[in-house]
Image (cartoon, rainbow over all chains, first blue to last red; front, side):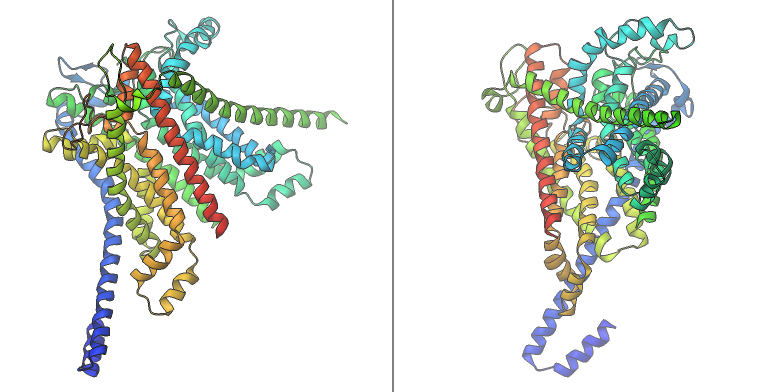
Length: 333
Length: 281
């Protein structure tokens, strides 16, 4: 169509110098327009390609380990560079347990903060307090690590951990979870640091979805005499449930993949211990600690396979989170 | 007042107290962390930190080479990540609005936004460090760029979507082609928002450690060569903090103080910029 229009225009205006110049100008604009459109489109496709490229390259890097150990890699407990016996189970276990501890603390605390910010806080203070909480999310993870190692871990070693050992440690059944000496560093400390790190995510996403609850619904609740807590439990939370779950999953995705903060305080013990006070390791910590020192193809490949496992776990968690949050947005918009 | 009312009021009071307490705790963590940083970091802050190289254990020194290295790596990350991010965001908000590709990119981008950064490091190791047989500043910059891109894509798309359609229509009505409309009208209208995105991306990458561990590696000496391993502030903090030497740990705290305040200042600047932008529109 463009071609016909161009030919017609050329025929009608041939010989007219000004018209030819205008024509050339328009053509240039048209080509520029096409190019710019193409450029933006390829950039968008490039973003998509990154994800695929990450999976493919990790899988190819991990292939020696995949071929050697197969599915046994996921269930093996050993991690021995000398005999080249590698298994992922201690690292996967540590990743899951530290994240579980983090979520157990951060989810209730984050939701409570969101309640405070949407219901109780005086309006002029809402923005500054909200920003302060979000700044907590801006602090780089290495700072949490150094703080956890030098401030939090020694503090826990002399306060909370002896307390746990002497109280809960004696109860049969769950006592094993709190057995052993107080090291300071360990699985529980890592979980606590992670909790502090993901707290702002839970809080700010929950606040956003709570704010999106239509005021009329809340007013109706107050109108029949509900307390703030009842309005929250019976109206706000049921309305915002999918969004809160999405926010929680998003924070879980963060906690699973967090590297530096955990590496500092986990203690790097490549074994599974029943006690949460004992040192352990996580997928990201083991990669951060050993990757540059890994000699031998199988060692490197095993670490890359760990990375692939971590990436796939967090992909699934994050995809679920985004799906839930997207649904909330569609409902709102 | 009967017993049911009293019980409900008591329950409400307890819940609201817990909420207030949780907020106080959240703010308390921030104070504790900043306090510890100031307390331990300021003790080692002297002019030499900015003019001397990283020392060997037991001697005095500063953080000049990691500071410069970090600036260079961040500059590469922003220089590479920004154009790609802005262009992709432009496609999503302008050319392919609501389309299938846009929805797919938005979904994947949001996942990349929270993907574990150490995996990005492994990826760059696989595609760049291993084939070229050496660690390099370029690889570190590329790893950081991959973290910049999702942040920029997200904010660019959001900010372009906020530009009222009438502005685009007005420009198109006087005959401006689409690319011209975007470059001279929508970009200008969304400028402060896009800049906010860049600042947020900057804040995000300047503290990133994990992706640099096996891409840019580390370098104890002065080097501006991007084809060789290069020092960066976060990696040096990691190495020094985990070491048994007192002077190294002190330098790690000082470095941590510098990074945190740079990052928080960038964050606050970004917020000021975006709140001014939204107040205007």
